Length: 172
Image (cartoon, rainbow, N blue to C red; front, side, top):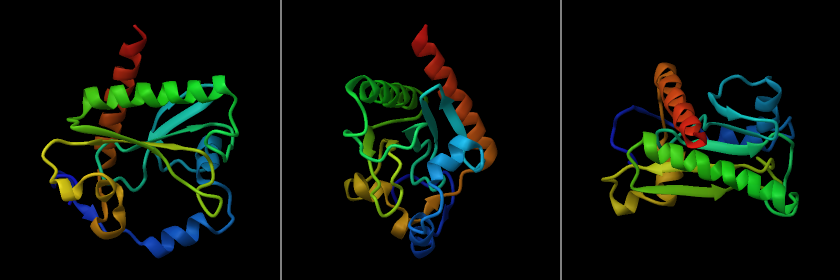
């Protein structure tokens, strides 16, 4: 297991997930941005970006950061200023996360494809100290075998408040 058992793990139905993200339905990030999907705890939103908790987290605080506008190419769909603004938010979220959560290593990556999850988004996840090496890196982020953490809504709300406060403190 990637993270010590603070929260129980729920089996991850990979087939159902793949069918959902590759079905051609509206993009999941666009649904969050529009308010049609309210299942994700939103941590941050401004005129161009959104940050919210991953619905299937393998690590506490696992956050996705995305532009509000549907963009599909992680570099080509942004001019330099837009790209740097998005990366500045990824940096701020990472700093806040490392302040709020025990963090041995911060993982940052952009995943997705034209076949599913095509809206550009960055994954920001804090690996806690004490995780065995074999359970780090990609193993820590993959829900396939280990399932995902069943984090109660109250804990997600508490963590979101702490992250928002850490983000706000960075502005001061």
